[in-house]
Image (cartoon, rainbow, N blue to C red; front, side):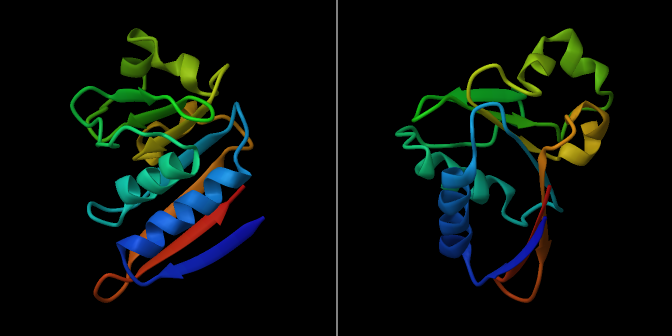
Length: 139
């Protein structure tokens, strides 16, 4: 399955995340790929809203992972600073790929592609002009 969506601003990217949350099930992994500033964290905020997470979602760049409670737990990993996928194994984060409970969303998933389980949803975010983004979803 492949779906391409063009969003015209952050609000539409959040809405797409909310819609996506309705399609996700426990054990799912969402692998986000895109340059800095393409809206990866914005999409995660929308997924969190769609899962009824009440906390503010912030990028876990410096701590690698955060878990938020909602309809199901939302595990938010950020592989931006990961130089070797073994780092995630060493700190026990590979247990979230896939999670026993909840949903895992991974920013910069291309940096740890070998750890992303088959059947995961890959989401590529690309800059267009202004605030527009092309978002390609593939399973």
